[in-house]
Amino acid sequence: MSFYKDFKNTLIDITDDNFDDRSLALFDYQYHTNEIYNSYCSHLKIKKSKIQELEDIPFLPIEFFKNYEIKSENWTPEKIFFSSGTTKGIKSRNIVRDLDFFLQMAKITYEQFYGSLDQQIILALLPSYLEQGHSSLIEMVNYFLNHAQKKSRYIDTKTTKLRHLLNDDTKKMLIGVSYALLDLAAINPGSKNLSIMETGGMKGRKKEIVREHLHSMISKGFHPKNLFTEYGMTELYTQAYAKENGNLMFPNWARCLIRDINDPFTYAKKEMTGGINIIDLANISTCAFIETKDLGRNVDGFKFKVMGRFDDSDTRGCNQLF
Image (cartoon, rainbow, N blue to C red; front, side, top):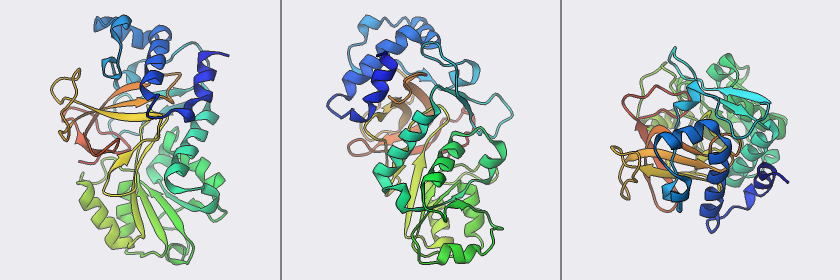
């Protein structure tokens, strides 16, 4: 069995106890099979023999996904995801080796936090993503809709009997981009047995606001039972979710590390704001070690908060709240 297949088949068995060893094994594989990642390590004069601990692993700046095809080994993509960004510049893209694997892991992750999809009604409010297409978020939500209960569907402010849909007795999860949730909240639709999951993203249509203010405005319009947060990006296979207080958490095969804001090769002290590095071990065939342009802070254990963006970074489509 190939390294790829073996690693993929054992991904959900990763625990806190073996996470470091599995990360180092994947680093070794990607160092030897990913031309761009290997060149980046060589440019930094990083020798593989010096990588002995998790903190030694170099993280590939996320900008590389705009200009290069990030691929470990040689294979033909089944799908290409593009970022939704708001700028006219080059969009990031993530080539997908196995679309079914991406979708299955997305489903497993969601269900770890929120329970079985087949027991839920999923409503989706993602107008701009539907317009642009080629979105990992749309691919994931489509999959969720197909595995959830029959009343699951996309909605917008023009949906027939919208208030009745939101206020009937059934339990529902509304997954929505921030600006669209605010637009819908402005008509004060109310809700009953409704949980909301905001995915971030003003997409240049509204002024960026802190998440606490965003949640307050959404709550006033909907009065939801719960208000959750999803954190994901084109370059990752895995999503993080926050069930309370904006404290995000990945499943066992992914982790957030906070780097020093002034030195990308050292780590920030506990409870200090810094740059977000993400280890996503589901990124077996691309690069599992991503240096993002998001700012974050560690909370207790493996939870983290997204605090905003670096000043010189492009506006991103998913979570871009300050």
